[in-house]
Image (cartoon, rainbow, N blue to C red; front, side, top):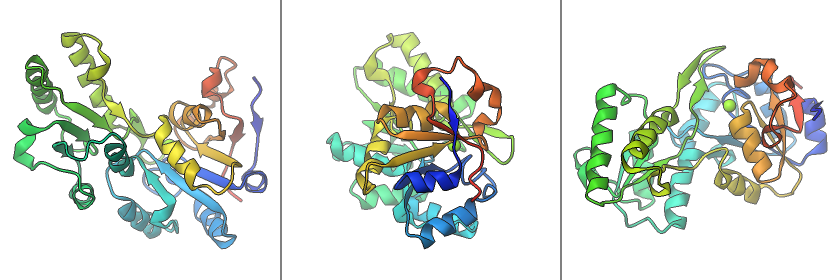
Length: 286
Ligand SMILES: [Mg+2]
């Protein structure tokens, strides 16, 4: 299937709401991507409806807004829909508010969830957990920690004590500056999951619940906050941004500034239909 090119001006003209991915589209992990500051200023000026959909779950939306503003990207926290903010939505929808949760994450995320009524356990109370949330894992993925976790789940599941795993951010990698990447939380949870499957069998109940893109929840929340149906998702990852947009039937444009900088992958005719964007956007410069 031929994928046509589109410019950012045409996007603004043809659509009424834009959903932006953050890393790889507006921000390269260290600094704003060329043209993003001007674009955001312009959209703010014309009062255009847009949201930032990010899988990052390591900080609160208020903190993210502050960090965007420090970088020159004038984005208020109401415009940010992060995988981290979905933890609360998910707990509420699934009636999990009374469950005891242990979270790997920053103090600000913990405070934020506690304020909303989530029952969080203290550092030394993991044994009591009915839910474990992996929100930020920057410090813990050592071999020792992974071994300890595996044995924690082994003990629980052997005793038929079910512990739900929630993984807000399903990204295996994320960009860090130009042409450099780090492993995301999902890389380590994938390993843990495989190990659990190996011991207890590949059973759906042992699978971590993944919240961010490409899963539907984040897109459904975004759709409900857009005032019209003329929505487009702009992202740099086929497997998250584009797949997710296709799942909820909204148009998408793939930028070539982020993870898919190797254009080989996008121009390949073999691209699977559900991963295929409607457009290619070579630059977000106005
Ligand atoms: Mg991205």
